[in-house]
Image (cartoon, rainbow, N blue to C red; front, side):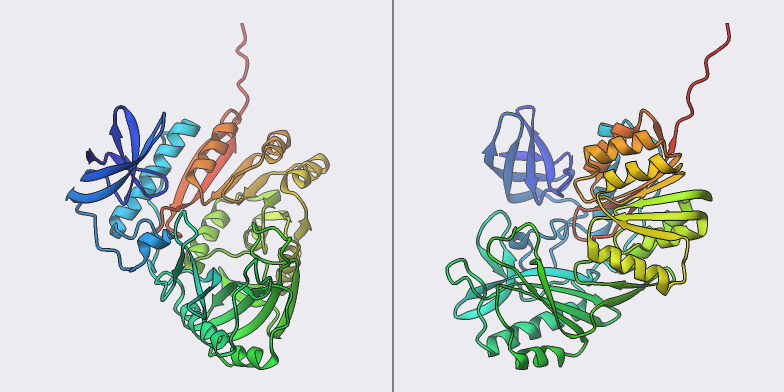
Length: 443
């Protein structure tokens, strides 16, 4: 069938229309005419695959990665940067209008200075293939293994170290974990900051040979090595096992952001793009008003809470991951910031307890992609916070949460940031202020 792509979809696909139903066309771009084959037909939508591009968008380019289609991790690699930024801006604008009823101004997107080799961390699976252990991932929507020769959005140090680790594992006849064998290497997790790399080998219950540890530590740039031991009955939703073993080198990684010296344990989360993280944190710091009390929910290792400390008498950070809270407390001491306190717990539950004891002037939230849960939304409404700064990597859940809050809060500023080039994801910072209650008119 011949389809004309009308707009972008939130996952980077093109959207056309057929029989008054939207058709999601992977790899399609607005204003293109394509010859496509219908692969799925449902009551409210269809899915189609491009057989041939008849009229191409001027924004279309040849993907720089040979496995981009199989991998699925960079679904915008066929669009040039101007096209990618237009996609992100249009999807954010449409989501805010659809779910939050917001049609106001959106600040120009902050461009990514490094559109390749920007990703400072990776989590990859180990597989057995042709009597070797390989590092890769599953092909999109399948169980087929895609061997990763090189990832061009990974930090170059990550890629160099990854290749050498696989070589060492094969030299020692290492095997990937399988349910049948119940023993072996599960995943490779790495972080890279300032040419220093932390390596975490996720394994079954097993001992890693001493000479293998020594060889990995001899790789140029590797400064930290951990083993995460994961039993077969542990959840696959978390890449790490419950037991973490420090094997060699530094226990923590260090990163400098916005003048702060920050330390991270293996489980602690940090933004995947260090340079753009600085831009996000700077926006949050600049938008935080001078006040008495600031609370940051989902605070991680405490970067935004620590930056907000200069604007408030007291700052409280809430985080559910214990390692991150340990790091946050250490980071406060490391940076000589004494008016910040960090607590470990559920964001909604802790916010309720804090608001019952004191007035919260400003709330900073940076929730997971799923957005705010019901308890957290109710806690925000009950706390009657004056100012909210919402940081999100998901325009859809962001807009839905703003739709819930709009009865009591007005959107004042929206700042998108291109944190994840080559992908449809866009980081967004939104400033909200509590609406003044309407005054009754005198008769």
